[in-house]
Image (cartoon, rainbow, N blue to C red):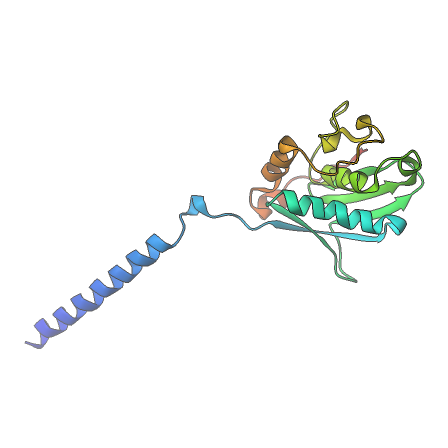
Length: 186
């Protein structure tokens, strides 16, 4: 008699466990439906001099337009993925790997009348894996200087956003495993 009672009790516990597990399985999103967390890239703009605000605004443009990557200022004393410097040359980015490199906020373009926030967003675009699109319209951030000094649009177009999403949409480990490349782009 004890065996029957124990078996009935075990069956009742098992049934509750199966129902609970089933409810949890239904409530949990499927693997394919999960949105991966944004890959955090830090930048150090302490060397950006008079362009510091423009750099922060250029980073915010990317944060507002893509979900797979987020640009954040590096904490004091911490290593940054992206270093931003001001110099007297033409703006450019030296990428060492996807999401890593140095951005130069060149004063030459600013003296010619180009918008500093567009420059910063454009150079961050290179670090995020985008090539120049020259010649190109003002609606394309990566058209750079070919859009002219009247163009102040700092926002990437749909194609540029999609490419960055694809570049960073995979796992952070896969992105970090990419072989480093050195390239200077403006």
